[in-house]
Image 1 (cartoon, one colour):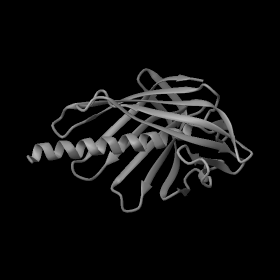
Image 2 (cartoon, helix red, strand yellow):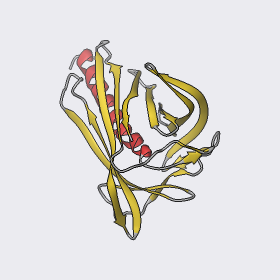
Image 3 (cartoon, helix red, strand yellow):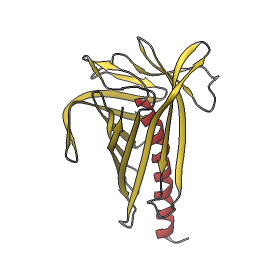
Length: 213
């Protein structure tokens, strides 16, 4: 197998890993969280977020990504109310073409945090996704992932400006990869940056194109 082909396969695998990570991270907008009196995770049945972005293959070829997140009703699990959240990705801009993945989680908002159940096994015990209020400058664990929130002020996306934004950084011990989410009050996630520091190194970025509350 040629080195070029091997590099392309590695890049494709990284792109698919990114899509899985993207689906997981976008599900965070399925909750209502307030910090400093501002709601960084607005929730309403029928709410929808549309994202677009781009990365580059080792040969320099641009690879386009699209993703959608939406809230699709409410349900009761073990007597507790959960919001169903669906994320889907589109890899039609890649050399492989076709659709990506669909990912479902069920979210519950409590006074002390956001809890979730996996969509493929809702009977498993729920897990804590994020403490509330969001602790600024303090690290916490979401499963095996270390998360830290910080204030970043105004973030510009195209011709739009979002004020009072937060940045959430996700890292796993021993993994040379990090992911950053930028969140705006009353909107949710507006920007995602995935940085892979293993060879071939890559950075992928998605930004919000449309939000329907």
